[in-house]
Length: 149
View 1 (cartoon, rainbow, N blue to C red):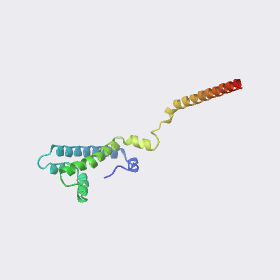
View 2 (cartoon, one colour):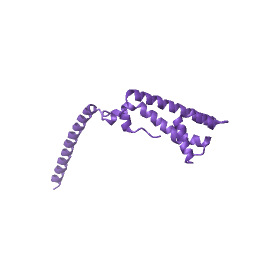
View 3 (cartoon, helix red, strand yellow):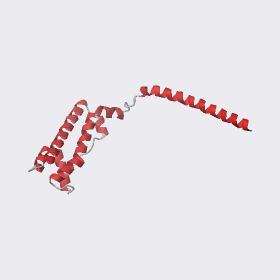
View 4 (cartoon, helix red, strand yellow):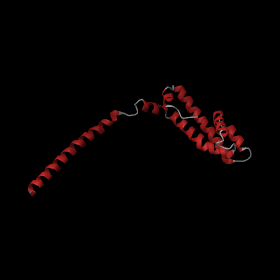
């Protein structure tokens, strides 16, 4: 599993975004349920937690077990959920929730230049004021040096 490619996000239609949000919530709920089962412990907690996960997550888990990165027990599954699945599903949920903002920022609509106009005027005003102050300081320095000579 991976995070969403920005190009994929740009092409999503409103129905796809709604489906993505629903899938992300469903995945998050399943992950939280499995984590709760493992925290509670008890007989067959590992099997119950595996059944609580979505098929894609179970397949992802099996790949890690096959590669011997985690032991196929409750402790290994809890670590896998904490280290890989939970961050992934939170990221997936966040991306689906903020889809419109991500797209707008990507195509440049996130920066609203008209709001910067007032700031730009202040900057210009301060630049001019600084130049006048600096010129006055230089004149005063020249006056002092001409009196000392």
